Image (cartoon, rainbow, N blue to C red):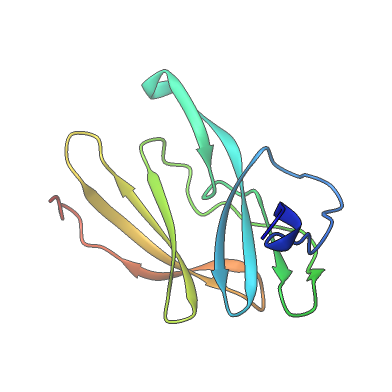
Length: 131
């Protein structure tokens, strides 16, 4: 290998950037992009970028080297104290909502419907499940 071009290949061109930040997972030969919108948290005197408040999703098919096209997501929560984690398990994409203020507490697990391109409630945790 003499240069970057020996091991790095450009596979596609994105039309336009919708959100400043993205979370990306690989699932079933596709790179799935989930935008992160700025979420103001006035009760805590700060804000951050999250996926659960309704940005967009898009995917890049690594077989055909084509984009699926952006789709707006519905917000699944407006709670100010939530954190989130996006992960893949058994070829499914999940979003875990939790709080880690003072102690770790899980709230809900959402599964991404890849056909409809929306988050669907998969599991709701019981209250007071603090770790």
